[in-house]
Amino acid sequence: MPHVITQSCCSDGSCVYACPVNCIHPSPDEPGFATAEMLFVDPDACVDCGACVSACPVGAIAPVTKLDESQRVFVELNAAFYPKREGKLPPTSKLAPVLEAPVVHRRPGGPLTVAIVGSGPAAMYAADELLTQDGVRVNVFERLPTPYGLVRAGVAPDHQATKRVTALFDRITRKRGFGFFLNVEVGTHVSHAELTAHHHAVLYAVGAPNDRRLDVEGMGRPGSGTATELVAWINGHPDFARLPVDLSGERVVVIGNGNVALDVARILTTDPEDLARTDVSDRALAALRQSSVREVVIAARRGPSASAFTLPELIGLTATHDVVLSADDHELVRQDLASESDPLTRNKLEVLSTLADAATPVARPRIRLAYQLTPLRLRGAQRVEGVDFAVTGTDEVRRLGAGLVLTSIGYRGKPIRDLPFDDDAAVVPNRGGRVLGAPGAYVAGWIKRGPTGFIGTNKSCAAETVRNLVGDYNAGLLADPSATPGHLDGLIRARQPDVVDAAGWQAIDAAELVRGGEDRPRDKFTEISDMLAAAATVPTPSVGRRLLAGLRR
Ligand SMILES: Cc1cc2nc3c(=O)[nH]c(=O)nc-3n(C[C@H](O)[C@H](O)[C@H](O)COP(=O)(O)OP(=O)(O)OC[C@H]3O[C@@H](n4cnc5c(N)ncnc54)[C@H](O)[C@@H]3O)c2cc1C
Ligand code: SF4
Ligand code: SF4
Picture 1 (tube, rainbow, N blue to C red):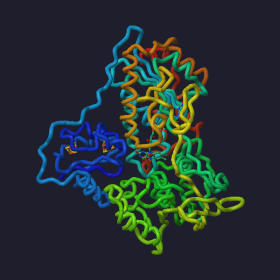
Picture 2: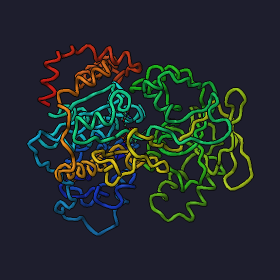
Picture 3: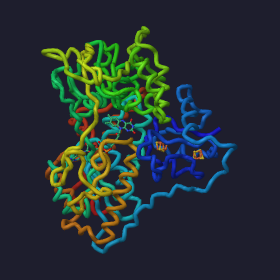
Picture 4: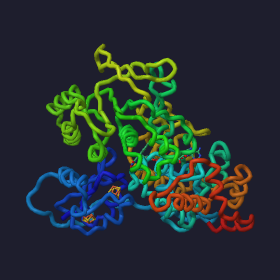
């Protein structure tokens, strides 16, 4: 029985390199990888060795025999990716070229030293790639006292398997040469010029934190917001922990239908007692326990075949929640099925065609997918009472009452001081991660390529940047730091006395795990003061020991 990849895949490609017979595709060197919704195991070629299972950081691969009922659909999905053929394939030699780790040419002036700004997936994969070689030093600067970006603050709390990638990131922080400067905002506590003075290169992996805004009347009124803010509130991000979220209305409308819209709808309609076993923020859990929400409508401007959510996420959602379509939307699905030729889109349409009719009564809160709706305005004088939509391409107006309206129409990077910015694409202009017109500056992740892809997509993205950075270092294009390495620690502490280092993060992490008790993976701190108090349980090393540690690193 072969192995299969299930929906919690985040496309980092580790399994591809572990597989001895090259039966997992598309691999990072194949054209379909960048746009793939997940990777697939070829059931005819798989020799069941299990190597991919241990390589996968999020536990997404299992032998067919170990799947639960809701995962069995992935057996067919994996097989359908491969053309039909006669008989079993013999094992092949490994075909996928392993991306070469860059070889750093040592210089007499000291080791290659890189500042990485941000600690999300792109930053951590870049650090990992750089630290594959002895002697390289990496200092990671993160504005929050807790690391890992959207893995901690974006990935939904009921997707704990996906969050398990943080165990890999924790291992990277323990590598020789790694340094954490948490609770330090680059641009506020330390400047680009100061980082450049202390490092050969500065690599920005700051993500794309801004939401794309919907420009219609009524946005901004109480009762309107963005899905990202809600996800950050649910996840206990300190900037959003006290967001006033009013769940007293029976209906929530989410405008936009990507995976984040699905995350929000799922959380708002999940039994809070199930969420109580996750790392959802305590404040959000209390609000969800009082919630009156009975229906979340996910409204899309275009038709079903243009659905932005991925097939694995749709399958995961329909396995656990009541998801319905109106009779009109069922008709749109039928029309799209009649003309759609792309196999992946057809798969989505087929799942949609099996959804219950919205007229069927359901006992628990439900999710309704709605299509061909263009938002015109949010209704309500003091606070939002609903949305008026135009049926896309017509003058017909559809009115939906709602107590909360959230937009989920994408993200935008924001400018970084001292670096160029492409306002249209909302990224830092770069070639292969080299910032154009700013020698010594590099980018990786969402600020480099825009807000697309999964956690693992940032691995190949970061690897490309690191290859170019090391290439520039080896070619003598990166000047040696002008400041003494040991002075960096003193500079940062002078500017931000509450800097948290790797030991401080370990103390926060340990305290959250203890607070979680036996029933929860962790109970997160949501106030910065509580995080700092937990970090302070680690005795501060003396100036001499800090200098020594900095030099050893
Ligand atoms: C709501 C949501 C849910 C998602 N769920 C999933 C999922 O389930 N599975 C999946 O595979 N992918 C998911 N993704 C996509 C995934 O999270 C991204 O691909 C990934 O996080 C992008 O990585 P990044 O490192 O570029 O940015 P981020 O993860 O955003 O990390 C950027 C980091 O930089 C820090 N930073 C910013 N500015 C500064 C500064 N000036 N100084 C210091 N630090 C700074 C930020 O605090 C942050 O920690 C989700 C995305 C969102 C928005
Ligand atoms: S079980 Fe072995 S052969 Fe099968 S996909 Fe995994 S690594 Fe490849
Ligand atoms: S998460 Fe990574 S290692 Fe796991 S199945 Fe997906 S691509 Fe493979």
